[in-house]
Length: 295
Image (cartoon, rainbow, N blue to C red; front, side):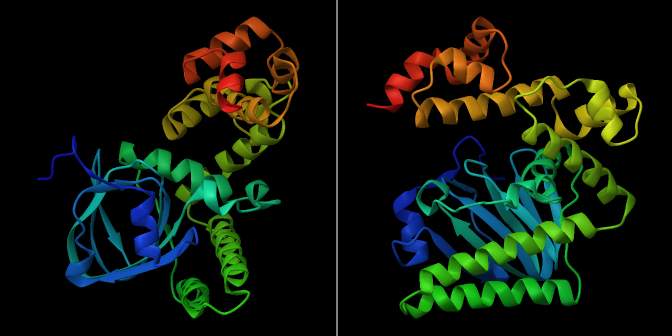
């Protein structure tokens, strides 16, 4: 069994070697024994679409059976490998988030976005494995978009990079809609929490009560609280604090607003409490973080 204390780490230069270009978006497909990659992690995002066969995917916590049609999001720094395969065919869409500077517009407010990028990845380590599975025409449509994206990236024609980003946008919207339209009871549970996370991300600067969130999914406060903690792995208040801190971090790096105003705009009505929370997560107080970011 591989040593999870020392996974191989793919750095920025190796991403560009895989992409065979300096562009921060790539398509990389493997099949059969070539899919049996050694334990590794990387500094980029990887969207995995299983296009054929089946196999075993393993991360730091568990092993999971994957099959044709499964869609997985692998975040940076997550050690993983494929350790068994049966005619397994996998297509990976790789991107460097900080270099791509991808304009999200209303993508993050779509139903299904949080299911794909937040909820399912959080559920995976707790053996609640529930990937999106595309069947028939849905898988064919995803493969079509990826094929055209790869063709554009390989063509080197003028406008190819912009076209590839457009196709990448289409793929993400398509996958979010697939999540939002899935109808099994387990998916419906994800969809209900997706609605809660969308609300929290939109209204993070406001006072939000547990009762408000429970009402969104027509549950009692206690039932909602148990469901949220089980699936997300955080209490609603802790998760909301994380959203507020992420937005505060962005404001500190990209604005000259006073720290007290940053706190207020991000839902912290007590500047001292904001500084305590920020220091706990980022290892330094907000003003020092801003100074370091601007040097």
